[in-house]
Image (tube, rainbow, N blue to C red; front, side, top):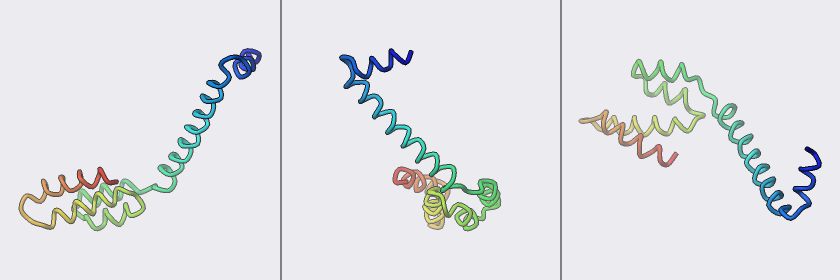
Length: 102
């Protein structure tokens, strides 16, 4: 098995093997960085956010999600909902537009 790997890196397809290995290393680096970002940096108390949304405490939901990009979605929804008529549809549309930017 090891002989096959060594011969693949030194045979006629060695350039492709090095390219594949470089892509693997790059993708592993991205996976590790994204995992760290999602699970450690953007950690929020989802129960607090859901409870605040269920009780219509939008400011509390924004405060609970402040460290997460989802807070921008909540802010866009709150700003659109304050306009008045058709507030739910306006908030939904504003959050959809903001989601593309986030």
